[in-house]
Image (cartoon, rainbow, N blue to C red; front, side, top):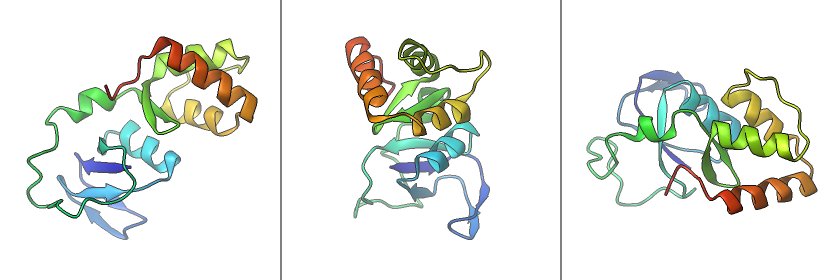
Length: 134
């Protein structure tokens, strides 16, 4: 997934300060959710491979309001969904969650799903078709 830095932070993986406008490529769902949930990054692209035409210093093609689209969302099976939608789906398939669970808690619950539970959740999400990235 490709993320655009919207607030400077020290990237432990990159071992440097990531400045506003820089792009990060990561497939680590927990890291992505932490960066997006913490307001440090916004999702620019769902592809894992860096685009050869990207220019980190001048990225005019990225939407200007990414933070509004991805805030309060969690990635499941490569698609960003609203936090509330995933909480409803997890509850329907029998996963118990605290009433005040946030992005990190939902991400952890998603990581612990069995294949059957993940399939049921995917079916629920496909039926309701309310992902964030449309």
